[in-house]
Image (tube, rainbow, N blue to C red; front, side, top):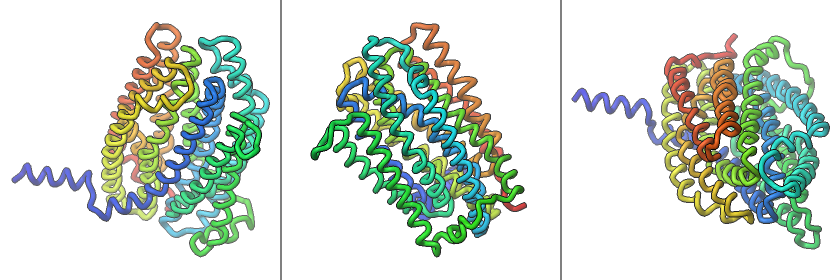
Length: 469
């Protein structure tokens, strides 16, 4: 009898009822659909470029790795204010939401301006960092040329990307996840259509290769921005914060200080984490251009499958953040336990599908057999690490929802720079280990983070209402 009670208590702690999962999926599915379609089109985009040749694919992949740092800078910049937005929404404080929106916009403009200047001045040198491994001088020169062409066009799309992140993040934090999804769907369809037309020169257009892929991406970003901005301001009954949004661009000093205290570690975290990911890719790239190609193929399919734990992690930040803002601490803890378990179990299933696809997916690319073989093993390792990454992602957003941004900074970016990057750097340069083995060791290091994350969530250090004062 006692055993049955314990079993029942354990089930009720980690598993919800039907209404609970309906609530979670109502938040998560639109994010999954938007990210899924975006990443699916990126996958098709990648395959289209990959069918032209290894150099064009590798050039675009290197640039996308560098732009990933910018993307996460923006994400970190708006997320600091987003913690406050979710809790203000829980309190139905529309003026508070307006103020956090203005803060996000200022932050995004500054980050975008700095990024454009950085890439215009040193983009070629940054791409060259990834071209120091094995490969002929002709292959490396071609990869550098294609990467530079791709980068210069992609910079034109950064202002639109910035605006989408500011608006869409605010809408999601206020419970509106469907519209950003619809805008994302429209954007990726535009991207897919113009990829086909411009990369291969269909319907009388010239064959533009990687330049065509970049142009298509830029067009799609402006379409997405137009949809999100227009809808937000035309539906002020659903988005009360949009009324009078631009009457002033001032942000109260007191709120700015609070966001900076909570948000700066988050911005630094996302920036340093993205830079560490770029550094890890550079460490692997010293083993040759085939490694760059294989890693690109693996990352492309990995990004598509990762949408499940990313969307569920985002849902933790939104749902738990709103409960914390409403002062429902007990419910926040209970909801968080169930959401973390749900994320991990979902990703066990997703990982199984990814493992099955690992031998077949690289065949879509017009590259050499060595690059395909490396891609297969990278995909398999990524799949096996997915449940672990799901737990880490949900844990990270749990801590962040309560404003524990210093803790998440140490937990995330400090760890990757102090543990993961040194492992990759030393093993890639000073040992003869195969690159796949190095990749496995880097993934295994995250088991330490799982233990730390479990302890921090269990202690409840994140159970805080940060907008009450």
